[in-house]
Image 1 (spheres, rainbow, N blue to C red):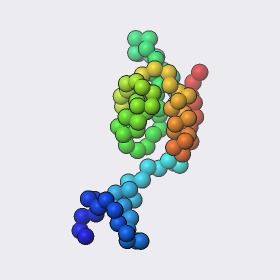
Image 2 (image 1 turned 60 degrees about the horizontal axis):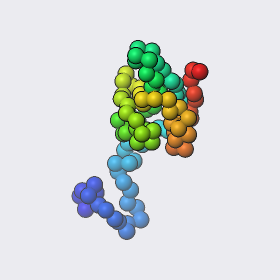
Image 3 (image 1 turned 180 degrees about the vertical axis):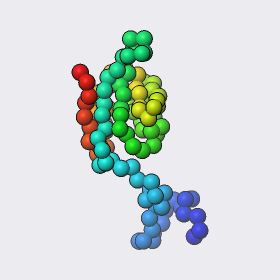
Image 4 (image 1 turned 120 degrees about the horizontal axis):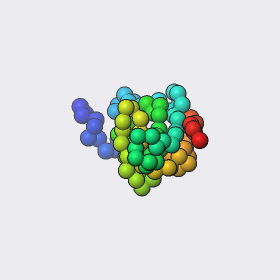
Amino acid sequence: MKNKRNLVYSTSADWTNEQEAADPVQKTQGTVYILRDRKGRGGKTVTVVEGYNGDAKAMLKRLQKLCGSGGAVKNGHLEIQGDHRDKISAFLSAEGFKVKLKGG
């Protein structure tokens, strides 16, 4: 069995998914900060997630679906349109991240 990526099911006891083992997300490393920001956005409020180390686009898509709003990745920060700090904080805490709210 040369190509394990197409494998759907295996009865082998020693089989592991090499893709998951090669690229784990470091959830316990560092702290994720969540803040609300309006500066330079024409008065519109966005929720900014700082300090996330992982696949930013994949996490952005999950957060957009959770909050029901748009967003973007800018300068390594995840930006979600609107004030969704509580939802995002609860979601990331449930995922195993250490979360701190920043600002007022």
